[in-house]
Length: 94
Image 1: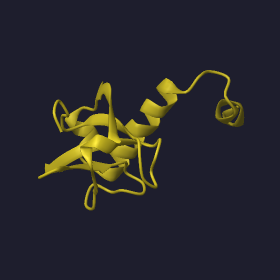
Image 2: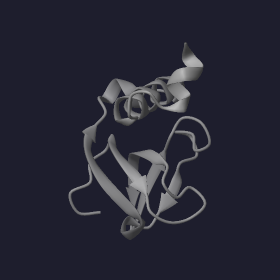
Image 3: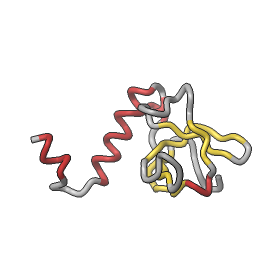
């Protein structure tokens, strides 16, 4: 939990959501609450062990955490920014 901030994007290193990017939305003793606006909603965030999370340097603005739709859009934008150009998903968008 050290150095994690509300709104920071993290990558799950373990569990069913391994390799997925999630946003930190809160803290409990020994746990970090994360959501993505899709499977894990702001109203029911997933508690994760902080040892199972990899930090990124990206912190979402507070407006992105106002509702699930905004969070989903912000997470989609983040995923698009880290996806290499010319990937299979990019070709589907053309």
